[in-house]
Structures are given as C-alpha cells and as structure tokens.
Image 1 (cartoon, each protein chain N blue to C red):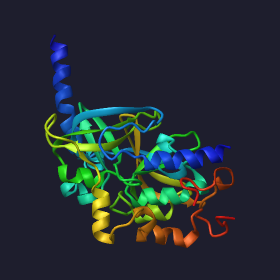
Image 2 (image 1 turned 90 degrees about the vertical axis):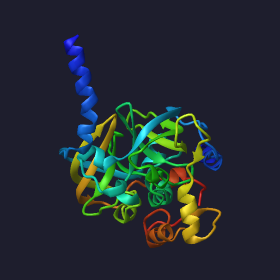
Image 3 (image 1 turned 45 degrees about the horizontal axis):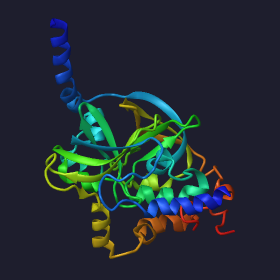
Image 4 (image 1 turned 60 degrees about the vertical axis):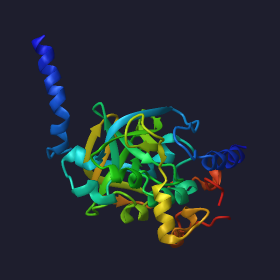
Length: 169
Length: 142
C-alpha cells in the first residue's frame, strides 16, 4: 500500500513542480519566502577560499540576507540545483522568492524566481540549467534520463547501484 | 548605551570580515550515506539506499548539493571532496552516490547547516542500504 501511495504521489509532486515563482510544494517544514540577499560562494564565505566569479559554476552558491547564510539547493528545473541561475549575480544583491525548508537537521532553499531589484518587475523563473542543458544536448522531455553523464554513471552498476542486483527483478 | 553601540559596531563589521578571512574548521570524521540534499532533507520521497540511487545520481549530476547523512539523521553538506576543485556535479561524488562512507575532513557550521570539506574518503563500503524491496525505485518506479 505504501509503495502504491508513493508511486502515485511522488511523480505527481515532481511533475507539478511550479513553472513560476513562489509556489508551495506541500513539503514538511516548508515556508514561502521572498527576500533580498547577496549571492555568495559558500566555501568562500566560510573559509575565505575565494576564486574569481564565485568559482565560475564549480561552487555551491548561497545568499546572505540580514547576516544569515542560506544554502541554495534547488532551482525550478527538476533534479537540478540553482548554481547556474545565481552565478550571473555573484556578489550582487538580488531579490529571490521560493521555498525555505526549515528541516532542523539542515535548512535549505529552493530558489524559484529571481529579480534584479526588489519590488521591480517580475521574478524570472530559475530554469537556466534546463536552458544550458538543452543548448548543449538538444531537446529532451526528461533531461535526467537523456543526460550522458547520468546515463554513464548508471550504466556501470544499474539503477540500484549494484551489479549484483537487478531491477525490475 | 555605550555597550549597545559597541555591540552594534561589532555586528556591523563581523560579517564582511568573516567573509574574507581565511578560517579553519573543526577536524572531524563522519560516517554515513551519501545522499542528495533536496530529496533527503525535504522528505519528498524515500531518499535512501538502492531505491533512491538513480534519483540521487540524477540530482548530483544536476548540481544539487550532496550531503552525508549519518546514523543519527544529521546532514553534512559536502563542499569539497579530496582534491577535486568542483562541488557542483563533482565526478567523484557522482561515482560514490548512495555509498556508505567514512570520511575525514574539516567541518564548518553556520545558520543550522553543517558544511564539510572532505580531505579523504577513508572507507567506502559501497551501497549497503538495500531499500528497493520495500520501496521499489523512486521516483517513477523505473
């Protein structure tokens, strides 16, 4: 029964991912948020190890707002982070909206929309990963299944991650 | 009043200074499963072991931060692994996604998040958390 519920609920939740900013996902501990913050390279902020341009896409990025560091874990593109969306704003203060998931074990932020100036204009959806991926690989209904790196990683040991296990059985 | 002014001044200058000053974290050894943060932290789906391996690979390749989840449910976000200079879709992380590992590294904590710079993967037991019999393959079932 649990498997049935999962198989129905999870894809529905994923496929209903919001196309525009600030939409709830119904996650535990989630809060709709909108705030202005400075885009930062997290490792630079913590350790003072600061390559140019926030690492040029190699580093995980975050936002600092009123002294708090928010880890930007997710964008509007399914299965994709927010680095490509935040990178052009490295060091600058922007306004974002999205979901803050306040899990006591690790609060993380899903950035759904970005705008340059607080309160001015519309939020642009965080879909840069998908744009870049399509430009590099061509259009695909599901980038994650078509991605060469992911396919190669899963080809080695299968979707369960172990050569000795088969799925479906 | 004087104390308040001093405190305010210290707060005003503390953040910029911290951002630029080289700092050392705490030396730690952490054991747990490599997970993708979005699925595991939000609980959007069952996010552990063989049932979630494929999704965890997709998320890591997509640049979602990866963490080590220990036996107590604590998460340690990996910002560097060994000598790799990338923490977005890092090839080494993709390769050991869902594995049970023990790592030595440097820990920073800020605003409720534990950040880990992994110096060395001291032990890698591979994928030992066999969850697919109970949960199938999540999401999508295939």
